[in-house]
Amino acid sequence: MERHVPNLAILAALPREIAAVVRGTRPDADLLRQGIHLHRLPGCIVVAAGMGSRRVTLALESALKTSPGITTLISAGLAGACTGRLTPGTVTEAGMIIDAQSGERHTAAAEGTTLITTHAIASVQEKIRLAATYKADLVDMEAATVARLAAAHGLRFRAIKAVSDAHDFELASLSHFATQHGHFRTGAFAFHTALRPHTWRKTMHLGRNSNRALAALTVALNAAINEVH
Image (cartoon, rainbow, N blue to C red):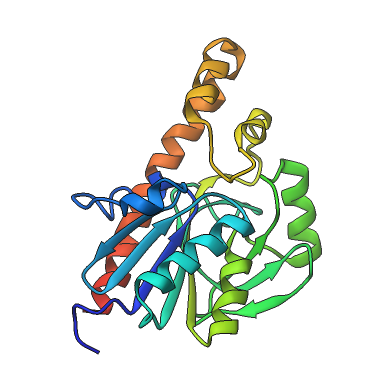
């Protein structure tokens, strides 16, 4: 396949998870009106359409319409650790992906950690349960859907995740700022936090760890993109 024809699609939830990778490009204007941030890079389509199964399905549909020649899907983004084995800022590639709702399991292209997908941001108690029940190393909200869709389309699948929060970290208010369309209301969350000084330390801690994770994720995704050149 010629170099300029995209054969890789990277699917993330939030625009900030792909921001450094797509720096210097503009998202598709028509799709942006639908809350879908789709960027074209040489040999690669990068999309962030929101959190959860429905939004990542829209991301994939948009990527395939843009480039029918896609052969590999990467589910990328931030995830929470379920055990102390993975620390914030760590990038890991999943070897097994499990859907917490259906119990369906998917084997990825590489051997690695066990990633479980849930429908909501996981609390500390939920992380403990997921580790005990599924031997999960980390948790996200999209990878199992991407894995299932990849299998349905006969595409290669990888899951590259960066740990943003430790197994014993929880900021309960986060879940209140996810919209029904899978987007995170950053401004509303910032205002909420500003009025509650007792949350400042934990919020700053999460921010620092998320920034470390995003930097490491960017390196890993750029390496994956370079592999297709």
